[in-house]
Image 1 (cartoon, rainbow, N blue to C red):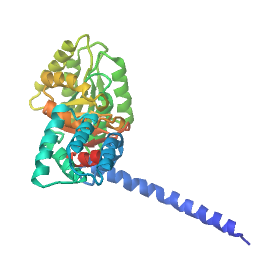
Image 2 (image 1 turned 90 degrees about the vertical axis):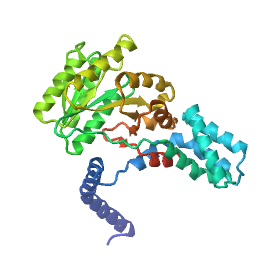
Image 3 (image 1 turned 60 degrees about the vertical axis):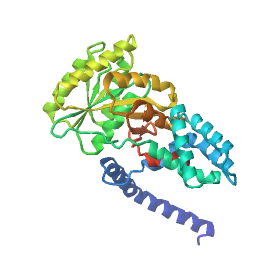
Image 4 (image 1 turned 120 degrees about the horizontal axis):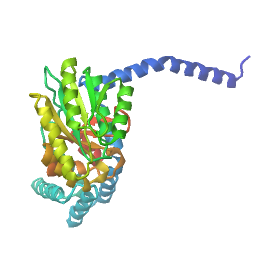
Length: 343
């Protein structure tokens, strides 16, 4: 006769066996939801991941809100908010604009308590991110070429792989192009990603002409019926001027294929904060950036850089990287970002 302990053990064994039997179905449903979200046919869990990965940036705002409890709105409140925005790397010009707009709204609505500012701040941050078009563009009937630009070390190659994963999961045929012929490790890394994702990679000879590599890749893509060509470009040459001239040349080569250039995406390392904006302006001037990918947002307390980027570069943040795996790239949504930042 079984003891009570034996009964408990049997119940646990049966429960564990049932869990193992159900696990494949659970994982299958999870994968279906993820693929549907990537394709735009279902709910995207990017908001939850964004909230999780902005935890470091959110802490100063949460501490500020704690200080605001049962406190009247006064000059100290505004000083506190200004300091918190600057700590989050929102930048002086953007911080000033947000504070001015928030003061005016608080006066209009007769706000007297400090903690009543929180929903107004969230709304103001959302409103300041006012670029309407955050979609990644495709060219029907021909390959859509997406150029990824940015200095070395910001995460361009990993971002290229993440984009390839998104597009592949959305049912599109993708070609990766290793156009950084000055750094063998970049091409090898992209080739490794391509093998992992089952996506073809075009690469040239080390030290070769990047523009020629891109030209051959686009020609090949047109012949093979490829939908999206993701180009990983160089991030450093002997001088910054040489780099910008090389990138401008690559852009001109793509533009020879009428209408093929769909995106020029500047990849920024969010952990560099305001320091990255100087280099970002050079890329914007040289190659006409159409959107920004904020990489490594999960590793910084400077999440407010998204606001500074949009104001300083006049280009929309289209995607944010919230992890290291191939599917940790989510669409940037201002309302979700503001909610995740303010907490």
